[in-house]
Amino acid sequence: MMLDMKRRGRRAIVHEELPTEHEDRLIRYLHRVIRMAVRFMAILMSLVIVWGSIYVLFVLYERLSFPPVWILDSRDILDIFGSFLVVLIAVEIFINIRLYLGTNIIPIQLVVATALMAMARKVIVLDTEKTGPLFVMGFAAVIIALGITYWIVSHSSAERPPDDE
Image (cartoon, rainbow, N blue to C red; front, side):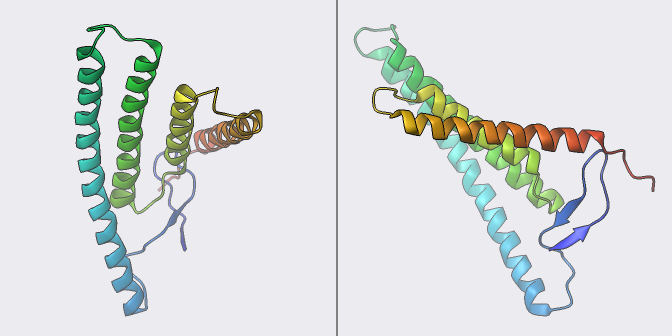
């Protein structure tokens, strides 16, 4: 990995993961192949977002149209929230892909925020009857670690002054 010493705005030092210029022709070619694969993943993620949105509509229709009609119980509401959050997580992943394509930089703060959102979704739809205390404690440890990581990354990038160029 090449270290890109330029800072954009208030961003921290970043790594250029797939540089467009490299002395080895094979490496340059492989970087292009990987960029094309990432573009393909962006297209697929767009389709997943559209299909996920249609699925949310389907879940809403299904829950509201069957007896008792127009009444949602707590399990229905959790299923709907879970469906919404899955689509929102897909949107966050798409934004990660788009930022990576546009800047060739992995946006660490956004990746950690996406992971936190995924964990929050899991907590919201967690079935406590089927989950043991050890799993919940491990889950809590992961959420705390992600929260601390997010706090460190957000504070470290906010405290760095922009470069004078």
